[in-house]
Image 1 (tube, one colour):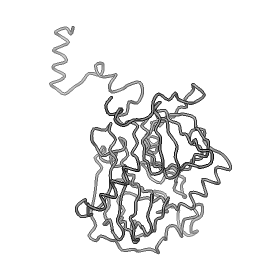
Image 2 (tube, rainbow, N blue to C red; image 1 turned 30 degrees about the horizontal axis):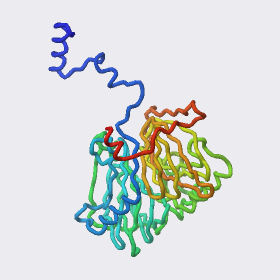
Image 3 (tube, rainbow, N blue to C red; image 1 turned 90 degrees about the horizontal axis):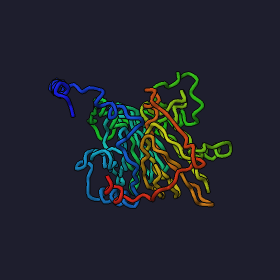
Image 4 (cartoon, rainbow, N blue to C red; image 1 turned 180 degrees about the horizontal axis):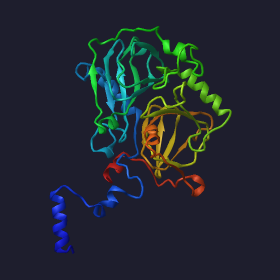
Amino acid sequence: MIEPEFERLYEDMGRNHIQPLWRAESSVMPSEPAPKTIPWIWKWSQLSSLARRSGELVTLSRGGDRRALGLANPGLGGFPYATATLWAAVQWLNGGEVAPAHRHSAQAVRFMIDGEGAYSTVQGDKVYLERGDFAINPPWHWHDHGSEGDGPAIWMDGLDVPLNNYLDAVFFEQGTKDVQEVTRVVDGSVLKYGLGQLRPAWEAPCQEYSPLCTYKWTATEQALNNLAKVSASPFDDVAIEFTNPHTGRPVMNTMTAWVQMLRPGIHTKAHRQVNSAVYHVFEGRGATIIAGVRFDWEQGDIFVIPSWAYHEHVNASKSERAILFSIQDTPVLVALGKYREEALATNGGHQETKEVFDAERTLAHR
């Protein structure tokens, strides 16, 4: 029972918009992260069907300037965010369409899922995109996308929109023309910097953002295969990070991107990190166990691993590799001194699988 003096003290504090720490300490400083983001998976069978139907029904003028299907994590209260810091979407362009030029303060990347004749023009630098290509979009850079092929162009978008909004740092500007002027040689950044470790001798290194607008899948795949001959991570198997070749830093200040290959028969050990990640299954099939729940995935699926959740990956195939692309908010945590990582120390480094993910059951228990 609260004594009258204390009751009056708390009432007076409340009227003056003050909350005593001793009554809120456990909620504002819990013993470990308690993210609202929950582990979740979006199946490609559903995503591709909805994207195709959107392509048939929604014009770019009716749906804004991007036909993008934002992935809304059920733990985030209806916001169209995949995690508390990362926005992810499947974007669909019909053949011959253009997503008009605009620019924004949000930092963006995209990973090409499918399509021929697709291109992206960033700040006058036009590059053609093929399946598996990874493209960056620094903040406040003009960019438009298009498909010069007959069929659709499909890619996964990744932006730091939730973080950008939380920081009240949002700026957006629509271009005066749908297609910006191409001011450089087509595929110029790839021709100029595509070998990564080399640059024109007369130019200073590009410090703030990568000089490469697009990282081609052929080079990425070769890097994976080469690394597999040398070493691998016990937690992620053969994993590479896209970096600025002039600095070695991640391609964005607020997020990084990985591609990893799970070789046949691999079952990685479990660890957890203070970061969140969104994964796209580029190739193959397998499973990821997140906080004791098994998420089975196949090509095209997209799934989320929240902060501080133990996770491990499984490729049970005896002959086929699996390849995952991911965006992660790690650079923010590292820059702020908040990043932490911990391996599972029990059961040989593997979690006990309590259940297989079921969307309806998960939502019913929330």
